[in-house]
Image: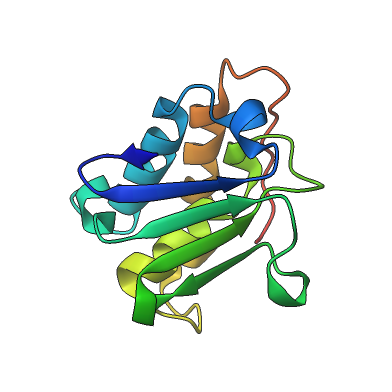
Length: 133
């Protein structure tokens, strides 16, 4: 599946049925996240592949960004109940600004969680509460 002009989304497991019946959810989350991190929007992720899978990402992590191959790998398994609860917005931050040491003050802002909460409104079984990734 492609969202935007070129961002490729790969789904593995039952992710497709649970969360992406409406592809606009992924589009909105990626677009809003990219804008939060200072990009013009989802276009900044055109060369990216985003893989959503039920299994944990290596080492039990919830997400990983590989800048050298323009890829974001996200675990969507427990405890997540919806896309907006995952650390996808966090991993987009790594894709847009790098900063793997989390020195940018935006990492500490509640605004990123507020955006996730706004995006989850109206999505059944999706309650986003502030927590650090």
